[in-house]
Image (cartoon, rainbow, N blue to C red; front, side, top):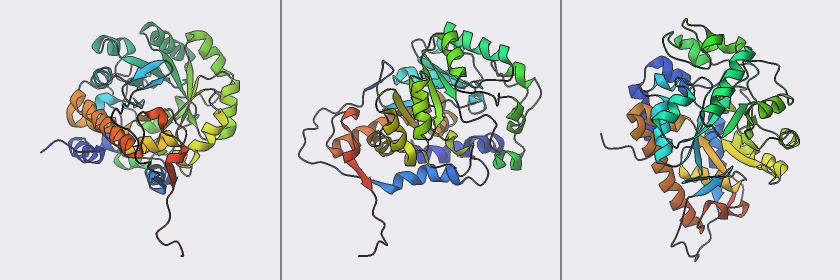
Length: 360
């Protein structure tokens, strides 16, 4: 088979190579999956407004997020249990992130420790995604190791006080194998096979804005809040000292019926008003999607599922190729829009799509 030409082709290849249980966990959303579908559909409601006769001889996809220079405005989102999709798991993903010069966000439910990742991919920019566990000692131990291993930011997931009902997992009876290493969740999970449904009691439902303070004091690292969907919460994030906001609905895996992230991005970015970094995730499949998110107020985006499709298909090389495909698509879109760099993209470069059945 020839190499995939886009992320959708990687999805097809990855599904063919992945067992039904892990695939259900990766692909599924909450309840009826309306928000899962809405995330990708939202991009079709916006079209570009290209400018012509602009010198685009030298186009770059480089950008900077929290002081780190990236080769493209795409970071790798935190995805749990990557060891289910490739034997090297997070180590392969980290090597790809280092090679392609971007940030890897490492899930609390990683199958490799931050130190293992740092050793496998020297120089990789790691951010530690944090679930506040009911086991306070396990949470603090995770933070301590993240700092010691050189993580440069904490990504606090704020939209999971309890877990959404993921019916695909229930339908196939998916359970994470007892022998799969989960270094930061093991103490809380125990060492028996566990389904995602058993995680309901794992995370603290009592996390509030005050928790940002002790996390910041413990780590001395910038904190980004992942899961913000309203202007009101964006204002509160700024007030409580967050360094960044990630506009996210957890990939459609939490509150089914929540809006597509693209539909609320402009509201959140307007509320943030440039005071903190605004990043975006949810439904990115093409470089053009990335550019639409930039136009609506994001400084960069995170991709989750596409990276794991690459991992499942071909390990480190697959993740690298997914990032390379997105970079090429971003560069092409920028040039055709009349932009030389991501920072040139603004609201004037997109417009709502006109329905085909709109009355004359």
